[in-house]
Length: 253
Image (tube, rainbow, N blue to C red; front, top):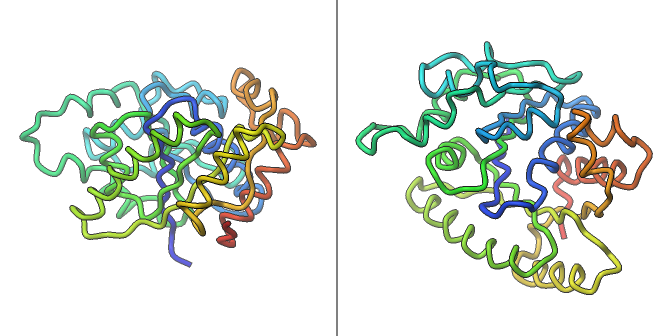
């Protein structure tokens, strides 16, 4: 099977994007998949969540600014799981001059000759629509959108879909789109309503397992642990294991 390149993306903050990235990647790695995850957010939240203090460690910044090979930046964060940290200069990418040619291609070019032995590369994007996200969209073949069950998230999704359609037209490509419900409360009416709306407009594109809300998921990052290390028997760990199987098998609703 060819390598999958997946951008985890939502321009709205607070939707569980990094939580999804960290725990889905670790779930897949625990299943024997070789996983690389690129922390493309200058805030370094994904790296911190994996227990890697990366604010002084060079990473994808040196690849995008200086052409360094991604393989040399990779840190083995867990068995079968490699992290490419953001690096201290990543925010400089957003400040590249408008005349800089192919600045949106930097990550795609780097991935063409790096991480070739990996089964899936995930790109954890910042909650913005700048040049870093453009690099992720040019490099990725798949888009994974974490969604919380509130109406502001639905409004943000509408805007994001407009952005994706523009990129598809400009790049002459078609993304494999997947949505995942995060912070889901099955007994809450609003959660049920939002999921129903998503199924109406995105039928066949929603990964089958929603990630139920628990306090444990919010607590994990402060310890640099994933849910499988912090509370391995909790329902969130079970949900992420099921979500990983959905990702591998393409099980959608």
